[in-house]
Length: 214
Image 1 (cartoon, rainbow, N blue to C red):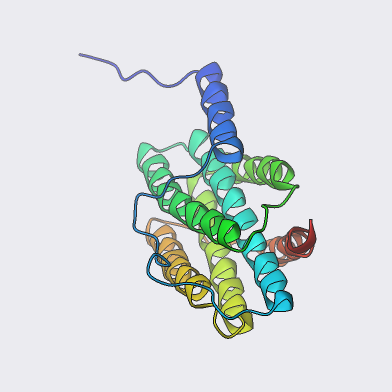
Image 2 (cartoon, helix red, strand yellow; image 1 turned 30 degrees about the vertical axis):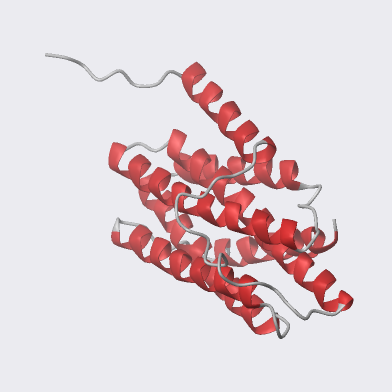
């Protein structure tokens, strides 16, 4: 009988460090086609371009957070199926990261200078959620994706006329986030107790306010 070797704490630490470096320092590559491939953000005034760049910087930082959150949960997941679920969702979120990076480049804008902070904080939150058990961890995913879906809906309403490329990206992201949330709940995610959703919303508000400008 062959026993499956579980990763050691050192293995998990090295995996996490490699993921952090890849997320923060390497250009992200999407597995799926970019929804904005045949579109452009055209006819924007300079004020609209700066506002759109701020919105896409928020979304790029949100995807940095998603990468860290999912990995922090995956490395401490108790069930292999939960880990596979989280890593699969993280792969699709990496597509979002690549698409947002491409939009920032097209808008002549940089990512948030605070991305390392967002990554570290999200990884810690993911690890804490995982320590509470897989049902809570999946519930955290479900609530996160519910809030992200609402946030993307707000951004879609705020997009200036002519932002066809950014609209295509955010629309696809919103569809994916809704599906990730539904899949997490179907996999056994537990509703989070009050006041956790409110605290999550407040923390996200701080991140969005800072990432828009910095």
